[in-house]
Each structure stands twice: as structure tokens, then as C-alpha cells.
Length: 479
Image (cartoon, rainbow, N blue to C red; front, side, top):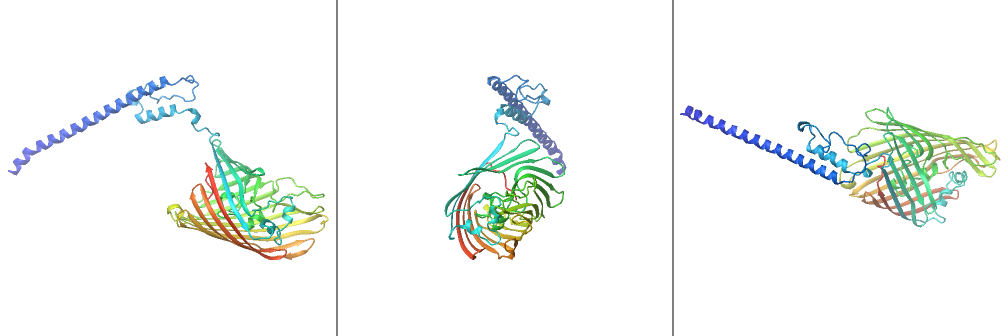
């Protein structure tokens, strides 16, 4: 009985499966027909649309070349014709006006940064005057070029408006420039040409550029984590850092970890450490007068941790003028070390993120007297450092501390006073930051300093409230 059941049911099962396959083939064939009909309808519609568009040029001079794959001019047999997707893609490209397509050298990014802040300190004559009175660091630096950058005034301050322009010029070069505009006029901060396709990990840059030494030096003021920069940068490199005219060559080594080596050759016009002065009888030196070298390395610590450390060396000509007939000429050398550690908590808007950063610089200046100082020497061995940390305690909120000291080593030898040693200056600052969005932030900062001056130790409190906005397409900042 069971055998009879099998023999009678098997043919029925086979017939059922054949019916299913037949139905599936019919559905596939119907889909093919629908796709062919859609493609034919698409081709007809595009041909009608092309006929309605004004003819801008002949096919031989058209800025949008027709290809063999275009559905408008294609003469390929159906089995070799492009797919509906490819046809639509090529048709869409042909309809886009050439004026809006990216053109190398003309597709430029433009950005602007506005930086308004309220500042107050409790000094008698202002913080800029107090800094000029620091023992071992006063007066002589400013007199080399007769230029005083001043500082923040009690009340509202508008830091220069920073305008940035950048573009990928062609497959070989990128360029960018930064212009600082304030009430007194405009100043060119950076104007850089940089290669993008040199072999062996090499990159060559030229123009007016921020040196690659240290950590903060390459950052513009709007990218600082605090309202102001550390004292060691103020007195070793000036308010704009080491920004010079010259060339830079870097090499990214093919190592399993990040390793970058760089060297630079500059004219050497930094007012603090590599100044060029004018005085009767003072020697003149043709540029370039400043050489730098740096190395930066960072191990792979995983997705949440990042560490970058560096060492820098600078050697250049330095001149100074004390009085009209008292001058000195020689060389200045600076050695530096820097590091930054970042922890990325991978949480919303920086919650739990942590940054620890520090830099140390040592300077050795050795000058021979000229004019009324002829036969004498002027030398200085000085240093300074800062250490800062910031923590994201809430989404978009950060708090941080910075401790800094200037002149732990502060030994001078002058024709007037002979060999003398001075004390150090220290400062502590706390910051609270609210980043409203990627383009705006509010920042409050309070600081207290112990300043070693010619009149003894002076204390000062500082307070600042900053509102910073950026708009436009801005290039990504360095790590």
C-alpha cells in the first residue's frame, strides 16, 4: 500500500515543481521586458530634452564631450548597450553646466574667524608693560626692531579677523594663505605653496609659513585651547610665533609608526630670538640667516589613545641694539621638546575626552659687542615651559588648567652688569569652554601670575571672556 502511494504521488510532485520554474522564468522575462521598455523610454526622453536645449557649440568644440556609452549617440547592439544606471549617470553629467563643475586651481575654500573677548587685569600700568619689565627678558628684545606689539587692553578687544584662502591648484601643488585684518590694516600671516606628489614621502613647501618646530607654533590663535599663548612663546618667538619667509622639506618615513623629519631655511627676522637690527657700525648679513630641524614621532596606541612627541633645534643670526651706539651681533640657538597625549572617549560631543600637552625650550644667545660695546660680549642662557590639560566633563563642555614657568635658567652676561642671574616667572590659568557648535564657542579664563621684575616680585590677576566664530570652508587642523 505504501509503495502504491509513492508511485502515484511522485509524478504529481514533479509536475508541481515544473510549474513553479515555468512561472519564475515568465516573471524574469517580464522584468527584462519592463527594464528594456524603461531604457527605451529614457533614451527617447533624453533625446527630446537634448533637442529642446540651446546648442552652445559644435560637437568638436563642446566642453562636455560625448562618449560612445552615451544613450543619445550610442550605436551599440542591445546586448552591448550600457545599463540603465550608466545611461542615467552619463546623461546627468552631460546636463550639468560646465561652470559649476570643479576646476583645478579655481575651486577655492574661503573662511573667516571672528574673535571678540573681554579682558581685565589688576596691574597698575597694564600687562604688556609688566611683561617688558621681566628680569632678563625686558627691553632689549623690543629695541632690536623698534616694534612693540602691545597686548590686551582692559575692556573689549577684537583680535584680528583671520581670512583664509586655500585650494588644490593641480595634481602637484596645493596653496593657502592667511590674512589678519584689524583696525590698523592687513597683515599677511601665511602664504604657502606645497607639493602633493613628490616620491618617497617627501613634501616641499615655500613662501611665508609657520615653522614646524614645537607644538603650538603651527597653530593660529583661534585654534589655541586657552585665550592666550604661554609666556615662553611670547618671549622666545613673539606674538605670532616663528613665522618666516623661506622653504621647508619634510620626510614621512615608511615606518609602522608615525615618524616625520623636517628641516627649514628662513631669512631670519624674528624679533625675539633671531632679530636683524640697524645701527651705525653694525655688521650686515645676507639671508638666509636661520636654520631649523625637527623630528616628530607617534606610536600606534589603538583607537582611543594618541601620542605625538617631538624635538626641535634652531640656529640663526641675532642682533640687538641697546642704545644708538651700543650694539651686538652673534648667534642664537634654541632647543625644544614637546608632546601631546589625547584620549578619545568616543562619546557624544567630546564627553570624556582628555588632552595633556607640554613644551620646553632652552635658548642660548652669544653676541659680540660692536660700537661702544666693542671688545665685550653679551650672552644669555634662558628657558621656559608649560604644561596644560583639558577634560570634557559634559557634551560640548571642557575645563582645563595650564601651569607655566619662564626663566628657571635665567643667566645673563652684559657689558654693563657683567654676569648676573635672575629668578623665574610663574603663571597658573584655568579655562572653561562651551562649544556651541563646530563653528562657535564661548570661553572664560582666569589666571594668576608671579612675575619677577626689576622692582621685585609682582603678582597679577587676569580675567578673560571670549566669543569666537568661524564660518566658511576651513581646512582641517593638524593633530
